[in-house]
Length: 120
Image (cartoon, rainbow, N blue to C red; front, side):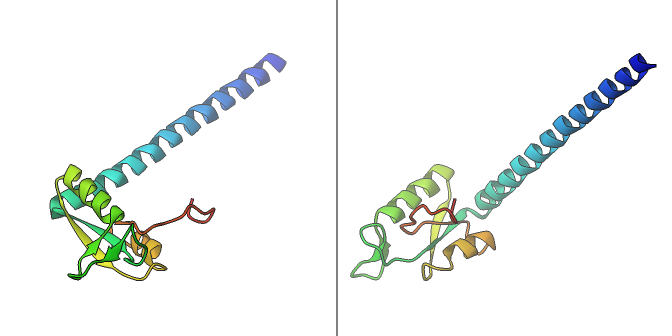
């Protein structure tokens, strides 16, 4: 009788373990599919949008001709070039950039961000 209960317990543990492994695989697949969907959307549109607050030279500023220029802009242009798309910079104040990314108003934000616990 004890051997039967022990076998049942082991069988239950193995079943739970296998179910947990498959659940983990499903979650990873969904995250990967989501990433592909965003990249596919960007490539299909032929443009990647960046939220930026051009008030932090030399990373981003507005030149005499009214163009947004700086290191972050140069880097974003290289990212767009690597993806084979055009860069569109959406100028905004600094505070709403992260929210704009989260809500899909822009594809990414680049504007002299510092690492904080909240941003991690």
